[in-house]
Length: 322
Ligand SMILES: *[C@@H]1O[C@H](CO)[C@@H](O)[C@H](O)[C@H]1NC(C)=O
Image (cartoon, rainbow, N blue to C red):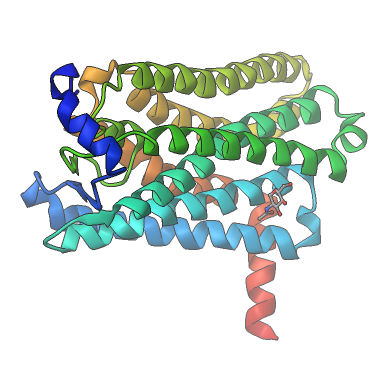
């Protein structure tokens, strides 16, 4: 944290707007011996996540049997995951192989904005999906009525609006600061807290604000999801037949796994005191939510799910045989 002692530098910085023209992403270059292994692993995960989620988007679009609220939200989720992995991972892969790992200052802002947009929207969308499961299981008779197409579109539009507002305001608050000093961050993408440490001004208030916002963004959806599951599980336990119980549970277990992974890794990274930030452990946990979670999504939704499996077979079959 640059302190008040550096006022003169800060003044120069202000008159000259931002002095930084590029940012160096240290990535994993302090783990030389892991570079190749990381490259291969991350590439495999990325390719799998990309095509798995793309397939989910396509199958839920073309297969009428999947025209239900759950698959509408799943399509949106998969689209988000294709997007937010593509904002960070390809650049990271290139950096793992190249000598210099730089990103232009403007590029850094663009990357931060889109990463926040997709990640925050995903957080909100996971709550919407929990609500969908809640209505489906606890109010099955009203489900088709209350979860009609308009409501679904509106609910996901709310998630996108929250994502846009947060991404816009946070990126703006970071990039209106003077940046005239150090230009190297210990991260593999322009993550907001990592970039903030470069600002040549006291960023303590901003760091606190980001922590509070993150707690809200993670906790509010998390509590909503938890509440939905309390109702869902108590309803499921009241189902008399074991077969009925397992059928009801299987429709929400995929979502439950997704939520645990996404919030688990997010909580780990963001709920730690800022002093621990920018250390290597955090970078590895960031890999979980940037690469692992999006990879797992198509597996748990598609391979464990009969409806989805037969739809995938049908879609691919049609392409092959026509
Ligand atoms: C996601 O939801 C938004 C808002 O309802 C909608 O406009 C968009 O088309 C959806 N995206 C996909 C890939 O289904």
